[in-house]
Picture 1 (cartoon, rainbow, N blue to C red):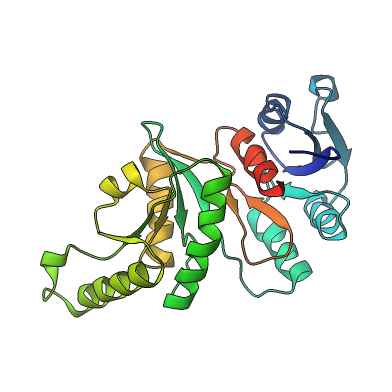
Picture 2 (cartoon, rainbow, N blue to C red):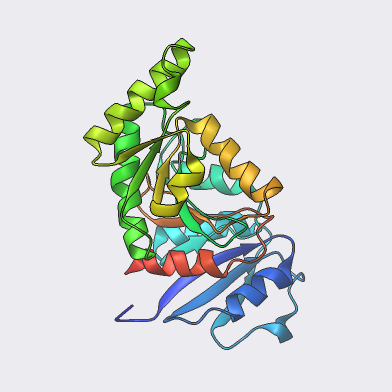
Length: 254
């Protein structure tokens, strides 16, 4: 990253030391500004490239500063999802958020997955837009360029159920229009060669995300919101650390 030192905000509501340790452990040409309620951060633990600012409503101030340009990017950190994302939608004037998640399997394989929200990516045009935006993120994060499109079954399953047939037909269309590969239902193969994976819909994408991160021993490193004008990386409070989310935000600033 060239030019002036960038400012990346990250929120703290709980597990304060986990956020501080993540911020201290990241090397880059940016300053991390931690937004928290008063009195929950041990200021003696803060490194030279980390600042702490305290407010009674840190999620609202984080979003206000992001939209006003007082910070260059934001990471949710451990702030509550409902109030933070509601403030972001209101500030950006959108009725929903489209996210592309950076995931890591238990064996250390990283890939992008979208849609991951139940109200996201339900139409062919929406999926094509996510492919376009996801390719840029994959490139910035050094992931493979190949895009894999998942469907509800193998090609040999055609005829077993009309919803499976529709899912396969749509995946074939998205793959053709999006210069991608239809990987059928074989996500275990897709992650080996694809930097970006498109789930059949927002429900299945959310289930993949939750199964991998909460049951499968994998990790979610953050999900950039791609339908707003500013850089915001959504995160899970269950994430082991936020270093990759901060690095992802910094990469998107380049």
